Amino acid sequence: GRIIGRDGRNIKTFEQLSGVKLIVDDTPEAVVLSSFDPVKREIARIALEKLIQNGKIHPQRIEETLKQAEQEVEKTVWRAGNEVVAAVGIGKIHPDLIRTLGKLYYRTSYGQNVLMHSKEVALLCGTMAAELRLDTKLAKRSGLLHDIGKAVSQSQEGTHTQLGYELCKKYNENPIVLNAIASHHEDVPADNLYSVLVAAADAISGSRPGARRDTLEGYVRRIERLEKLADSFYGVEKSYAISAGRELRVIVQPEKVSDAQADLLASEIAKKIQEDLDYPGQVKVTVIRESRAATYA
Image (cartoon, rainbow, N blue to C red; front, side):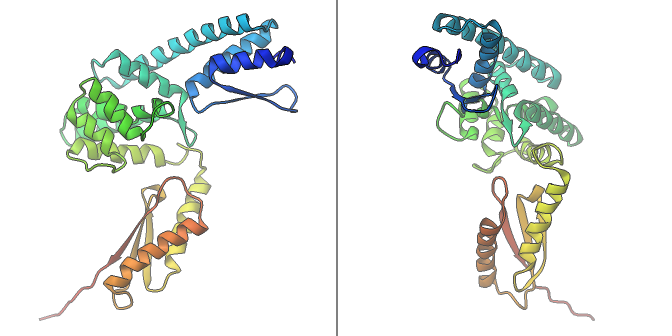
């Protein structure tokens, strides 16, 4: 009752100032905060907890508490951004990019914290770059910034790769870093080795068992279902789910499936996956038809 206030004035004030919707239902001692912006949602959560603890809830108090919560979250954002930049070791970076990176602390993707994912990708890129005798700092920088667009994708139109590209371009990041951001989901072609490393590290970090909201058993089951579905089609010799189930490679028997039929088969398998299976993102279906001629002398 205190949260709602007389004629709903408290809840209306809170929602208007915070940009977060409060859902108060019949569940005892439970209030749901609804917002697409994870930073605003965290500010609202901290403010609401303070208001409930204090007990004095009125429009002026709500405004003051929200400002305090915003300052707390801002400090956490700065600390998180600075800590990950220091931990990865990429040298100087624009303060606005550090702050935007810090916002990823409150963003998750399939249960995986995006800031920790970005850190993992950066470290993986650095390790692979060292093996290939490339610039490790540039590789780590590309990896750390690859998902930065997810920090602003709730408030701006466009994909996170487009938004990340535009943001880093604004602060004069290296063209290699820009291409790595734009190409890691194959929206544009990769034009350098660093972009290839970022795409590989992104797939490794996101698909390793336990990284996202997927148990090992569920992960294995999804892979097996994909392969079993493809194997059920006529002319399929063997199928392999790779890249954590994001791609399905289907090898067909050349004497049973022609080149024209291979194109049709890829479409039919993709359609069947859409109809029968639940899966995150996209699944790329590649049908491989190989004919060999051998003789002995």
